Length: 435
Ligand code: UDX
Image (cartoon, rainbow, N blue to C red; front, side, top):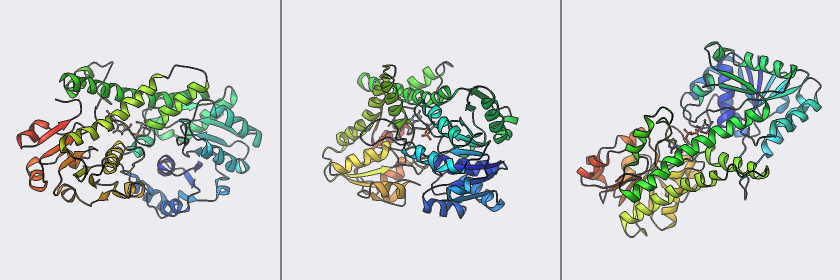
């Protein structure tokens, strides 16, 4: 099938490459010339395990190309809209500028029978609004909403073989046609038994934002327990293990620590709450607390660091990890980068090492000192902070670190170190929610 993908960021670039991998003939359209040039050369413009291989195969096969020219979307039967919906400056609502601009630019190139498929995370009500515009532009064109649930670091796997497909479609014959077209797009995964749920637009839009709100709430729940544990001498990791054995609760997404960040969870819970406010509903007021607990963890790590070093002005701080999570070079709303910047602002001398995110972080926080390897970050440090749980940081050897640093102090903000082993090696070792 011929497919266009409008927007080639984290979501769109992966989606375009994976659709080509599945055998479709794909054109990716983006307004960013640099991104299009990189992708056209078969290179991923961001770090995502497995993506370079898929891109290389797909571009070499001739089934995948990228362009800045929207008219090249003409001729495709299915047009995925995968542009960003960032947080609006000065408000919590989603900024719909890019979605609206993408649809406006696409409309003149639609033909009878084309299906526009929204993938972006949007406020409920968006699909119905856009569907009217699509139908008005071309007699037989229609719209479906097909949210994605991909996680960075697992984006290729999550796209090719997701947990489930969700199709938001119009009622009646239009819905049946949209469903049939999407089934054709996803035939490979559907053949392996991947569940597929067909529903109306509003429900499909809500599935996405409510899934993210639930995940964020689960993380903030355990981080709230970490605060209680800190006040009572309890251990939040043992608590999570114990409650996680209850299958109704589950252990996944109960890792207490520095909390959630990234391009999705923080802005999505804010936009969801803003949408509920617009609807005159108090239902999501609790998400303000979810957000607040999450942000308090960042402040807590800054406080712990200050407590350990005494005088923060001039203290040499080794920051291990600035990506918002491991296996990513993404620093959007990164808790780790926030902590590093806060300490720098208080006068600390902050030296940062991240296996993949040094360059992305440098672009937004050039004031920090980025070094290419762990040892350079550790050398002469007054305190070491593990802020992103990359595998290489989990495996740090206390004896080796002790040889490099000036003072034996470490903060494990991701609950990945054996604090007992570090203490046995002479470190003053602190964690979050752990005695
Ligand atoms: C998330 C959703 O998981 C995905 O389904 C959606 O499509 C996009 O948003 P992603 O942003 O890639 O994906 O990251 P995710 O793995 O969900 O982690 C989000 C944040 O939560 C990270 O900062 C991570 O460190 C943090 N986290 C996760 C915790 O603090 N504790 C946990 O137990 C799990």
